Every structure is written in C-alpha cells, then in structure tokens.
Length: 148
Image (tube, rainbow, N blue to C red; front, top):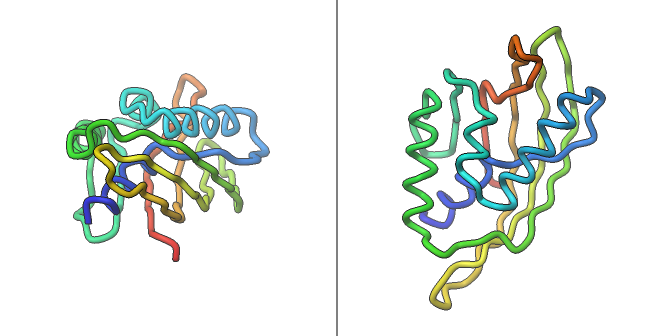
C-alpha cells in the first residue's frame, strides 16, 4: 500500500505530452520536470487552489493545501526515495476555451533507501486543466489508476 501511495504521489507531479497548444506543452514539461525531481513545491505551483485529486482507495483530496499535505506525508514516509526513470505518453487532448483534458500513461522507477526493492510502476491519469487569467495552464482535476 505504501508503494502504491508513493506512485500516486509521484503521479500528482507527472506529465509530458505532444500537445497542440504551446501553453499545454509548457505545462506538461513543467509537470514532467517536477515529477522527475520529486519536487513537491514545483508540483504544487501547477495546481489551482481549488484543485481535486482522485486516487484509488482514497477519499477525494480537495484543495491545494490538502494536496500539498498529502504529498508531504508521502515524502516523509519514503525518505531518501528518488526517481531513477520516468516516461510518460499523453494523448486525447481536447481544448474548449480555457479548459482542456488529456489522458497520460506513465512508467516510473523509484529507488528506495536501505536496500528496499525499487518501485517499478505504471499508471494512467486523466488530467483536467484550466487556463488562468495569467494565461498559464494549471491542474484543476486529476484522476489516477494503476496499470498492470
């Protein structure tokens, strides 16, 4: 369960896609960089204040503060963990004004400390993005599920 939680937390910071919109391409690159570096602050900069994360076997995590607290808790449970490999392929981009959605398949390998086996996981996410008044795309909703 802790390993799955780690994967989900890392995926809160995941993304890289061939997007038709330059702003979404920039968002996906920033999301990918934050995920690869397991950088919670960079991840949270990509969320809207009222964002919601929907994860398996977990109540909805509502609001930027709650999402940040979740990420911090997971990071504390896995001190010394670091990403050794991260790949993501996104598709199905749909744009409607200041709203967009896309789905992404990801594969990540996270090295754990003290000789624990590495986490090697795959997942699928649905991202709902919203473009703010400043023109930047941010996460509004995120749903993640593991892939076999």
